[in-house]
Picture 1 (cartoon, one colour):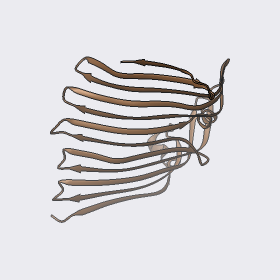
Picture 2: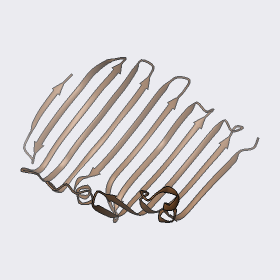
Picture 3: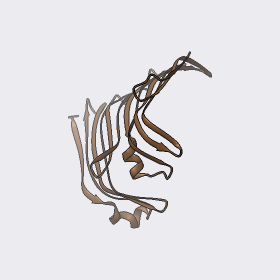
Picture 4: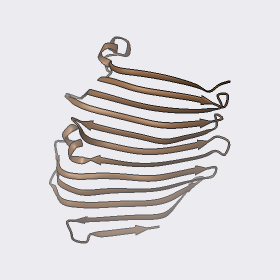
Length: 219
């Protein structure tokens, strides 16, 4: 059987035209997508790439209508002999009016024969832009990012996790609490065997401005 390729293209589909079928809760957006699936080795191996863009997204959250959102998603994955899945890349970007809100890069894999899984991820949230888009009455920040990255490996009997969470350059206030160039970080390494959690490393640090802050370590 020769190699084969399937392609699907969606060009600026307006979701408002489909609300009669999908329901009125469907967010308004303009959708474009490119999907390519390639089969080789008599269909035993598959490779898929997907690029999706949602423009002019309009969300209704409570009594507030949020306009000007853009969401982009791209992924590249392979499936070998229907048992070895490898998501080589998954990229997600959420913007509002061209301004980044959330970015995420990840990869993952799973082998059904060996019953092993893995994942790596790295994300960044822009706090001022997020609060402008999804406001909280008691919070206002002019600067600050939240970064998250980690790795996960799972095999029969044990799951290993390593992750870092960093809050950087946070400036603003939450209620009566005022912060200026506040930094905080959490680093965690742990494994789970059955019902037993083994905490190999837990480190918390915090500081405000150039001065040294506090640190907590546990294991």
